[in-house]
Length: 213
Image (tube, rainbow, N blue to C red; front, side, top):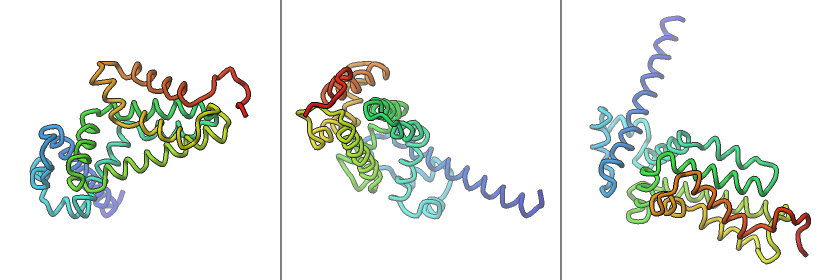
């Protein structure tokens, strides 16, 4: 490797290391003081960088939180959730998507809880990061409800809109947190309750070969 190429690689690695330190500092601050607004000065100090570096890497406070949420998704299981959506059978898609989303949140329950609390109490504190997260969930829920309807899987008395509403409630962070934290269930038990509730509430019996007119 030539000297110039080596220097380019070293700079890229250093830049990625700095970016990682900043994102980790945001997570640390959220855990240390979940009820306080996240100060960029404090994040910079924890990451041992300047505020200028944060702005250079992320553009703005909102850009930092958007990047933080994307990184959170990727490290907690976005790939598994994306794979669940590709399942060819609608009923399997239903169960796999709820399971993947639940396991994803459970891998860093504390951070997901803080982000959702921030969105309720002070939406501006995290930019639009959580809203973007919820808009993605809304799109996924609407797509799943349409797949269930188009596949003839829904019960005769369940409309696509009704299915969307039920899925929205069951896939929200609070539904999972109530089972894990409030009821003390483990992730497997919580996933089984959520997926089974969704399937029984929305879908015709699996042994019913044809949708009812």
